[in-house]
Image (cartoon, rainbow, N blue to C red; front, top):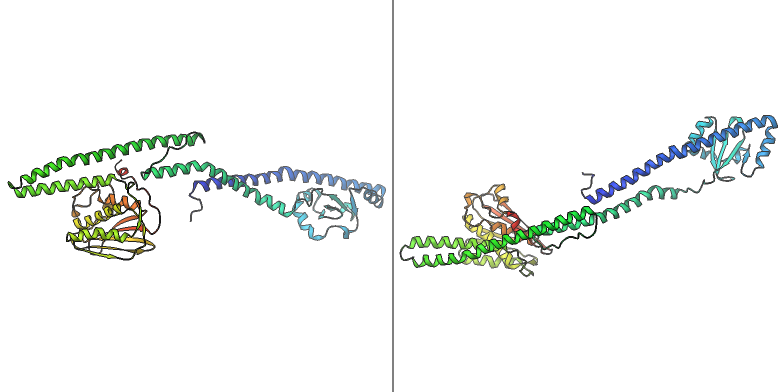
Length: 441
């Protein structure tokens, strides 16, 4: 269990709050040792001086006359009747609160805190011969329990709220930066971040981000134009080569047939390049049944005589891009046909609140490293599953799955073969896919 929060927001809030709390504790310590304690000790010395004065005066003028003279003073209350003194239940509090005073007056001094005749401190000493003297405490009773509690708990709470608001305001530009970085990583259009106001450090980071964004967009455009141009311009000579090969078919039919197959493979690779460049943003989104898309693709392969078993269970409708999903399923089935070496099994259904579509074959398996690498552009599997193709098929699959907030996995099957598992959330908005060109930057 991690006690330290992962969010920089809460880390900063807690750090500021602890700083305020520690400051408050040190203030209390300082106030006790340098304000309260010296004041109490000084008062104790004055009280001791008064006790000595009363004792000396009693020897000269008599105890009763001194008590009568003191009682005529409006701010001084004296009594030799202990029943008028604060009860014994106050002794413990007085012992704790006025321990420094007892250290000066001596352990034989008795201290009691009471509210009659007015809030104050009752003191007696053996030198007073049973006389109790009352010293008023002007501020006693003003510090009610709820006021102390509000101060002790409210100050840290107030500091916590202020720190949270301050850190939230400070972290807001960082959140905008993180959101913009995430969007630009997915290939979404992102506006320039503000460099007009804010802390100088944030402005510097935003300027660097804007410069990076411009460079990445320029590089992406150039790469896309390069791939699109190459793919488009190669079609013309390929078409001429195919026509020439077909015209020469009477001379060497076997050679001509091989040339035509090679040209068709090259044409298919160019199609993959074009599909790779497209990001699906120009395709309309619709709400539909995923099984309908699967059935459209499956029917094409069944018409070509592919041994394919299709098990489709009822699925809820989701937001989808039909053409992109058809391309994705065609790539998965195409890989299974090309490398599977046997019967292909396709199934759809619900699993743990998600839509699951599986495509399984009985071809050679792959290692974990090879399966992860296959989702990268221009990656091909092990020689046991062949090396034909552009290496973009599964990269396009992952791109389309990411566009639909899903995920895709490859696993080896028991008894041999490979299974592709594609998961889609039942609800959710479509998101622009991760830029496929990021894999070759």
